[in-house]
Amino acid sequence: MPKITKTAACNCGQVQVSVTGDDKEAVHCYCTNCQRATGSAFAHNHRFIDAELTITKGEDVLKQYADANTDSGNVMYRHFCGNCVRFQNGGVQTDKGCPMFLRSNVVPSFVALHEGSIRGEKTQPVIELYPQDKHAWFGKVTAGERKTTPFPWDPDAK
Image (cartoon, rainbow, N blue to C red; front, side, top):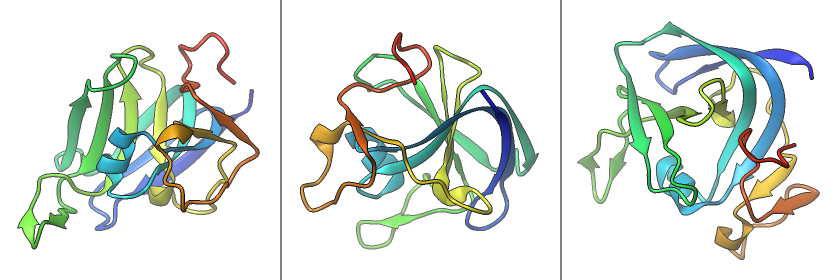
């Protein structure tokens, strides 16, 4: 499995990270948690295992949300820039800014970078997760679908 390095930055540039690890390729996740966390119809994540994440800038503004409301009960740590504050519901300021990456309480070496924050070329997803939560108007973007999440702790993980 090839080790690759990708760098990412938030929208305002205050948070920058670098990840080096085994390339587990990109996915689209349509679960409702990812929809809420990204403010979109899906999350486009690039996954790594045996990953080393380095925060190269902005550790003081990087925020974390422990998302325990998952199908598996495993906690997904959602990291975001606290400086890139988004506005919702008619301009009410929230504490959730630009999504950067995810980590897991089950496999500490797992990192998923949000593809939109990655600098350079973006990667087409290889599979779609939670297709049952996918909006009917959104077309197919990969060759495969799975009903369960292929995270490193899954016995049949790719």
